[in-house]
Length: 300
Ligand SMILES: [Zn+2]
Ligand SMILES: [Zn+2]
Ligand SMILES: [Zn+2]
View 1 (tube, rainbow, N blue to C red):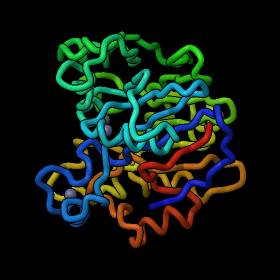
View 2: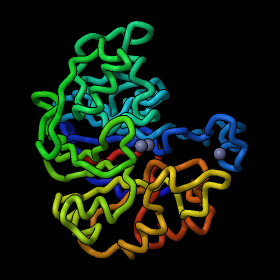
View 3: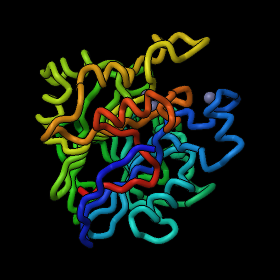
């Protein structure tokens, strides 16, 4: 599903692996018999993990973004994609916000599973407040991160993270995208936000490409939850606002020289782009953009 041009990769490179591309509920989503969920139940190869990334630093360290319930499988995907064996324990973890799919694997770092202590965890004040309230902090060394300030998750990892605030129904915590700045390329991880107007306004921009260029973004992993607003049958889509892929495509048009690579992630189980044969999938590809794929790696 989708493609990403691979870049020349030398050893010691900073490299990011996409290890989950679905919305919080995963595919299959519990109790759903839609076409996509049914085929994922019947064929485990069609199964999609909630959105997450892992980055191998230039010193061989491993850094996880988000902690989903499919952590065990995803650490395996990360290790294999990044040439780190069958699986690995991450050296740090960073979180964008506190919605369920992004943090429901957090307990697996504790006593009942991995039994870690002092694992550095990076998140905003309000996200760490949620973890304290849930009494989920014992495996971690908690680091509260201010938005807009670049930091290295570990000393010699060779890249930085910056938390970029984005408006998103913030009932539990605020929400950030994460800008990853590597030695050669920058990548924006933006799984969830409410709508482009508010996000762009917050950052003083009017165009998506203008905002991405202001951060020097080469790869943009963007919220692609829904194809369009008609998709959530039986539920009010206004309760779960996300810019649809069709809206984003309307705003960014076709890919032109000098544009960043746009890769849609956080795909809902109802989204027709999950089917490579769909006209919607082909539309995204024909405009020069792509749909994320688990196990893809990007050299930064
Ligand atoms: Zn989400
Ligand atoms: Zn479904
Ligand atoms: Zn969310």
